[in-house]
Length: 343
Image (tube, rainbow, N blue to C red; front, top):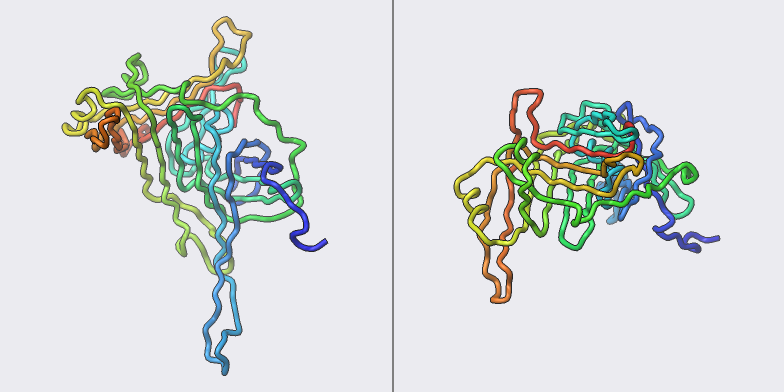
């Protein structure tokens, strides 16, 4: 059989993730992720040496640094997204059992990649037989996007310490969740003057789409490497940047005034899915809550493109830490409610 005789299809693949206890040490990636796409790949920089050697063409080529990474995208999920988002925020996961048996609450706050969720391992089968291990993974950029008529999407740009291709098929021990991902119909957008009020207000501001992004600005250059190996040895996060853009129908100057007057506020995205269990009298539902405790609006003028347009304004939101120089200050906090006891 010659190379290229057969054909493998992406649909036969799988993606599984696990939490590392030591950065860069592979640890049992067995939690399945229903990926929309996964572009993890291994690249090694090479250089053809231009030397004086009695000939017009170069004669030697060397390999240099190894770069491993790519983007994972899936539909935002009340179970599968928790570990990935905790890594994306560089924080830990505080899990607690609720009053309803079998239901847990998982709280994630932004941190400094110094917790037990600080690095991830992946086991990825590409096709029907060939698998790769990716280890020492950290999320460099993270996005959640939502629009009317669509499921909510989450994407993660990851950088890894290293990768290995080997026979390590774990399909037999993977289980696929029957829980459905979140859609636009299950989400609401709330704005208020403080985080506490945003969490308790019943006032919902209708929106048509949003794009929330977190950039960790991981250091991956020479400062993250050392002599003697071609892989990164550390992946420190530098200054984190969180941005939000929203599209909303324009009917009052309320949002515009928040922009012009530099009004400080707080935002909450609240998603509520199906019922977790039918055994309780008041059965709780799968939930995800994203809270931005200190925000400022930008650019809220509506534009007149054509006579047939419904007026909308696209505005961006600056997100900052609500209480810096303290252990409780944060720029974003996310909680999940599901039936997983711990991650």
